Length: 341
Picture 1 (cartoon, rainbow, N blue to C red):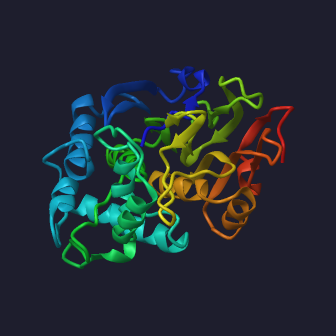
Picture 2: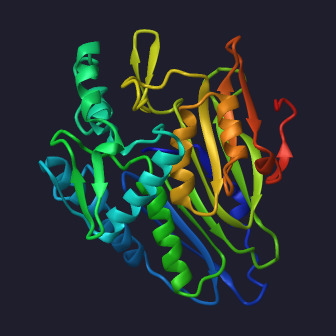
C-alpha cells in the first residue's frame, strides 16, 4: 500500500562525525513500488545496497501481487491453498492476531474487493454493484483461512484470495532493520515508502526528529508537517485516504475497503499514524484504526499496550481536526497552535 504520509526532517541529515569516530552512511534505492532509504552510523561501511535489494527482492518473491511468480499469487490461484515460506507465514500470523484484536476490521482476504473497486493490478471500467459485492463477501473473512504448523496456508473456499499490502511493507522495514542489527549497527533509520523503524541515538546523544505529515487544516489540498516527534527507538507508520483514491463524480473512492460491508471506507478518518515497537505491528494496526471512528480508535489505543496513535479526521461540520493518544503526545516536541485535542 502506497504511503508517503511521513517525512524525515532535514535534521536527520545533520550528523556529527566528530562523535565517537562514527559517520553517517546512506543507502537509497527503489523497491516494492516505492523508494527506500537506510541511514546508519558506523566507523566504516558495514552493509551494501545489493544486500538490501536482495532482502527486499526475496520478500517480493513471497508476497508481491505484482510478481507473477510470487508465492502469494500461487496461493491465490490455488483451490485449497499451498505451502508458504517462513516470511509469508510470519506475516500471516501477525495478520491473524490483528484480525482477532480488531474484530475483523483488519482482514487480508479483502483482495477480491480491492480488485473489484479498481485498486488492484488491473484497472476497472466500472465499480461493482450491490449484488456483486454481496457475492464477493462470501469469500472474504480470515475465518476462511487456516495456517497449519507446517506452513501450509489452507483456504476453505477456492475463491479466497489474500492481499498483504496493508502489512507486508511494515514487515519489510523490520527485516531490513533486523539485518542492520545483525551487523552490529546500533544507530539507524530504515524507511520504505514513508514507513520508519528507528534505533539508537545520534552520536551527539540526541534522538531523531520525525516530521508527521497530513492534509492542511484548511482544505486546500496542500499537505503540511503537522507535528514533530522525537524518537530514539520504535516504528512509525501512517495509513490515509487523501492521497490514494479514485474519483466518481464529486465523490472520492478510497483504496481502503471495509471487509464487513465490501465498500470503501466512508467515515470521518482522514489518516492514522501509529507508533509501535516494530513496523509490522504499526503497519497492520494503522489500517484497522482507519476503519473506526475517532472515539472508538482512541479507546482502542488506550487499552492496547505498546500502541500510540495520531488521528486526522473530519468533524461533523466538515472541518478537519486532529488529536493524539496520551502516549503519542509525549513524543511530540513541537505542537501547532491550531492543534485540536
